[in-house]
Length: 624
Image 1 (cartoon, rainbow, N blue to C red):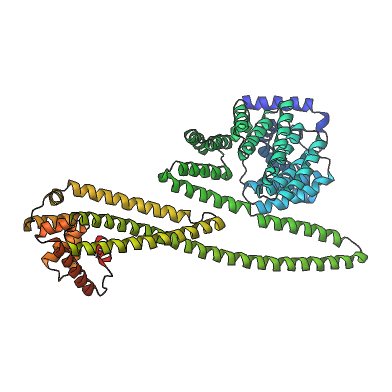
Image 2: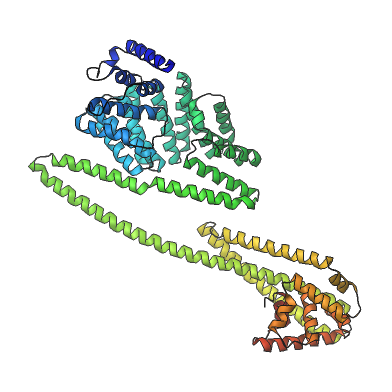
């Protein structure tokens, strides 16, 4: 009851205060509808309250019912209520397209476009906006003219069609000046700032936003002031003027407005992104996470937030979260791509212009029919030529894409080969050090010393060849990245991760061997090993190396006990001098036994080993 008395009192005051202005449609309209329309622009919340409290005119009263549906749609839009149904506006649209004047038709067309845009149907929305912008030219409703053309311009702007957006926004600005509405004039300058930013014309973009802010401060319009400061801070961020960006954002935080509350997610995003650019990553993440939990966050803002979080994680090498942020960014990006549909909207603009041209030509007399026919022929030729050009262009794009894919695969193979070469070089260097140490301790064994010297020379030559090949591979990779961007970075990261895992595995195995009693004794004694001790060593090797001894025996069932011992010691990378003590033979005998063992196993496998190194590498990487 209290709310009803308040609304009735408000209604009486509005009727008294707007008596002369409410007379335009008062003959057939209930006073509530007349007054709701009168206060729609200045007090949209009051207009919505009046419309919600009044009895809804029945459908049998066509004009009143359609007017109520149209004004209710307009009031919800101006109160920033997201509309997910076109049921009300469809009633108004179908009625006023048949019975309404130009102003009602233009309004119905505009809000049909607005609701379809809210529902994500950009292609349908653009058709209504185009028709509304034409219909409003027949009226004196300058505010509606601004709304129709600015909505059209923003559809183009959000899809990076800057020229069409600028054309529509200049028309909207003209209507704002005719209406002498400071809020709409300031909005126009904000929209100009957005369009200039799409064209990367940062200087004019900043000037446009500064004009919007100056007008808003002069008229004390906090809503427009917040919008201008918010969007100007984003432009300063793009040109790396972080001090000015922070100034705008912190000035924005001192202003109380619904515009700021409705766009908190974007404001927090800009603060977080500014901190990111100055490498204050912890502060950046605080604001970015705040942005994610805000209500009414749109898909464009969410996409930018996940992109920033990914870049921060990349800088901090926080690999645990990188995949999560990349997946979220890709999901948002795909949603934005589905919304944009730039080509479809451009086609709609072309079709709409063509339909207007055909409609005018139909109204011409017989003398102009030949001109129409010629125009259509020219248009058909243009469309045909455009089709041919598009076809050729698409073919070229597909060809280039195949070339790029082939290049990426080749670069991936280069990176893998480069990594394999580096691993081989490291193994060769380890073997050279081992042989050098053995030479130092066995200088009296001339035959062994000569064999080891030859092996060192061969390994050194192999390393030089691999290093030379690596330099060529590096040059190819650098050339490819310079020409094609950083498409192979993901492969490089994968290889680095695999390498890190391999290093960790090696360290863990060394730690396990150091802590194992049998291996510890094996490395500290110079006495021969008993059969029981060998049995313990073999069991420990099985546990550490995934049943290594068992798999060797299964693969080579004809191995002699002495051969198996020798393989186990090679797996543990013991030197020849150590092995000679354990087996009770001299070093030259160890070298000979290794050679004979290599030859026998090569015959059993059907693939003889090329040298000692390849045999030892086979044992080290044996998979069964």
